[in-house]
Length: 555
Image (cartoon, rainbow, N blue to C red; front, top):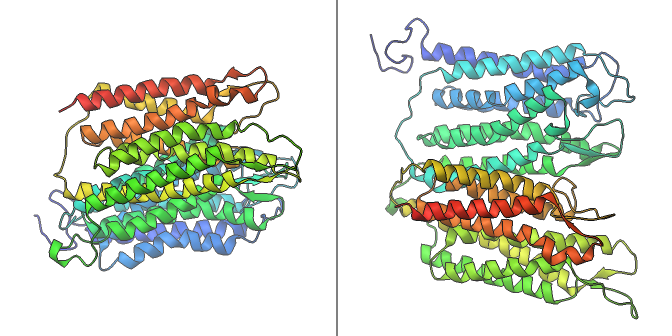
């Protein structure tokens, strides 16, 4: 017998175990799991009397209870939303479980300053708190599985907001994934290990990779729900999970002696904020056009604003390339500015695409290619920062033009993203499947780009290039370029052919700027040689251009 009341389940389900009971069981499991996880630091996760880097249990208690408190707000009025919150939270449980189980194997490879801070190289033994923590993860996972099997009523479908902002959700998820690949803290204490998943043993490495994969997967899954309330709850759950991963090590870096804040934790926290903001945007029902209280400027006007901002960013980069980046004492020669040479190809690409956007064309390529400016500026600013460590050397006028170029590029990217959202709102729904050859070359181009930005394009004796995980000024530029390329490749797989071609063209331009670092700046290094990143960048450019050509050829 099939009924349609709130407590019924779909046809064929067990009527003795209705949806409301199943959801209450899931909620109870989640509450128990949160309480066990919160009690773990008080009981001690290691057998020895080893204190944490700071008094973290109040923060850990708050973060553990945040998802269940979120689910509780929806439990009565919107039970399917509460179920979604529990299911999304469970996405992160397997990764967290494996990371914490590393403590049972070898604590010298575990970076959990909020739980314990080693005082010697002697491996520590697991304590009672560790098993509470493990039990808590298992209960959260069980709660998510129970909640996911609860029948849902998606309500009135509202796909317009999803189509408009899905790209931003993907970008926020990619930002979280990159942050989770990085070290959670920096440290000058040799007893506190620092490193990302790839630096960890097998158990923690797999757990870290699962966490990095869970962030974008959970975000896209939540954002793709047709019901606005379900989207809002799911994205808020992702934000809460990311905050739980970012805040404990970030606070340790701020308050603990000899520990520092890492780029990775900052990126994960920014991703959490982005998901919370997107929850507010995507959680609104699509109102009729005549009832909209806030309307975006016209598409033509947004294109014009974005193009003008892009031209101003290119002009500021030109000022950075032509003006001296350093001031040296009188009588001393001004050093050759090799690093700022990279501004030239970046500003040319942005200027050309800015003119195209003003004409109403190439908006996706322009949005991606803007990342070339922070990529080039990062290299220039890193050189200036290194040089000014000498007391008599000061920043020149060129540095302010370079910083202004980055600020204007960010403003242009935001405006172009708004234009893209409006384009998707006005466009007809598109469900064309990307051909397999296009998928293959696009994925190859994106994977090659990972190596292109992570490995040096220039090597030489006694030369230490800026690395993606070095936490230097130039690392931010590399990170901006990599995020833009990876996000563009991912979005190209789900975009209409013309937009996919433009996205991949923009990604190819950013990667080409990375490759040009070798011919433009190699004179600064004695016995310079091409690094592995150069060949990966060239191969990535070829693959991305091939993907753009294949996408453009589709009808």
